[in-house]
Length: 136
Image (cartoon, rainbow, N blue to C red; front, top):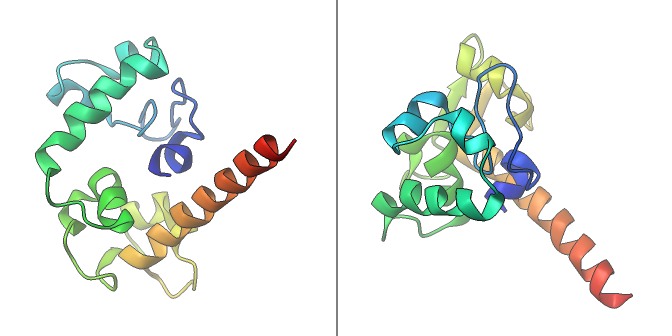
């Protein structure tokens, strides 16, 4: 669900604003921390990138108990384990501007629950498409 939301499962996706790349949209600094670069990630197959998804998520072992915690590990790691009403971004900040589509109620605050709702909707869309394919 997170990969589908972040990259539409296109492992070559690059965010033109941030440079985030790949299945879970690694930031350039994060790629370096994982021992690679976004340029190298972009040139990998989706299967090869999965090794880096594993490497990225490994430190969260035992901490990702909900889909919102899983998504937070990618979007805003400080929110892993926090309540669903935890505010990630406030209007007037760069982080808010970059993620304003996640503010579903348009109140100037993006909560963990709001951000995750978009992932869940996207997951349901992909599940529905998969069911359509298997029904044919």
